Image 1 (cartoon, rainbow, N blue to C red):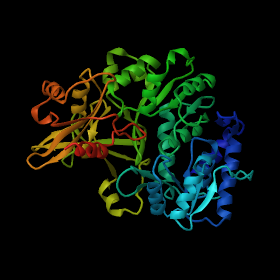
Image 2: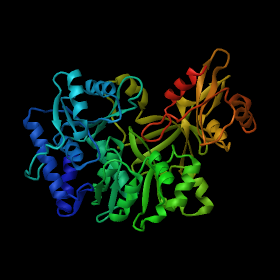
Image 3: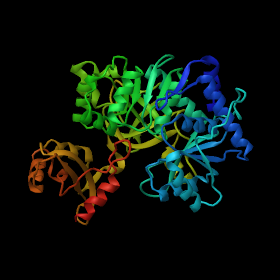
Image 4: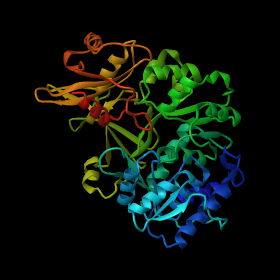
Length: 498
């Protein structure tokens, strides 16, 4: 299966149903119109001389034009390269150069940035996103095989050299076969999307379309408008990152809106603090669908909202990410061997949805994708019932005096103090201990506490080697768009205080 064949199938099955709705002006694209315009755009790119697996980068926001370029590029057998708009020009230029992109399509808000990038990359073609082609026959420009590249999805981006994950047509469409039955959406169901479409949110949007559902694209996230649109469109589902969830809880009252049609808010649980999780359930009810996946293996596990319905088992459910989806296998490995149920180790994933490797990095690919398994670098526990709990990152484990410290347990201890709003722990180099525990701490507004008091507080609940030796008060914890703590930046903050 490939993206063009998928769009064609949707257009044949639900030609007149609404596929995309633009919340800015109410414009609607039916499934047949979406496929026609995407295929026409793909043909136009081919006519401009792009061929083979040439790379087409996309820099834009959450709009129908973005998706027309996204789907048009892939349906023509070309490779889309979604860029994170939040990155600096230097970081974006490095990704474009690494991908050897032929063309950059950009949204209105990014015209100046696009010109700046073109100055750094001679030969890079520029096209506005709004120049979508007109109608054409309902036939994609190419039907690439399953092993052909569909996308290069860059991970990280804030530190180090660019690293792109190779997503094939086969891995992308196999991921949809996992997601569609797990989410339970279908024709007539509406999904509201206020997330940027690079690259993780794009997979759930495509899954909604593959199920015959409608996607409302609503631009950038604003808490009150988000709730207004959920109510207006009677959306059955939506997808958020943890930072969005926190803003909703701080700035709105969900109870003031009619959300009776809403069945699920899909969010990655690993980055949600327990207090935020509990507050979200209180505000929205048991509507949180918990997913686990990585750029290399999107949507590998899912826990449906129903798992949170029973208060007696809710606490346990809040700590897990559900069971592996239909086409996914999960294994926990310790010291190179499969671990028994209930034991902690590295999470390994196998399935047709797993990426093909890393772009132009054969050594890293061989190291991470081994014997058919993708080594995630995550630490987790798989219980006897097949439910996965993520406990940390293998590379983030702090090694102090030959003993292991998980940052998460230090952060929980600090956050248990009433003065602490957030905390992030990281290992700092030490000539005697190898590493010592450091922590960046955000205090609640209007509250003061001393470093010594926090250290004494930690001593009561943590072993001596786990207690932070360095604590620095900061205005905010460095986090990615998905709400995950950026440990390298935390280490840099702490190192400056030594």
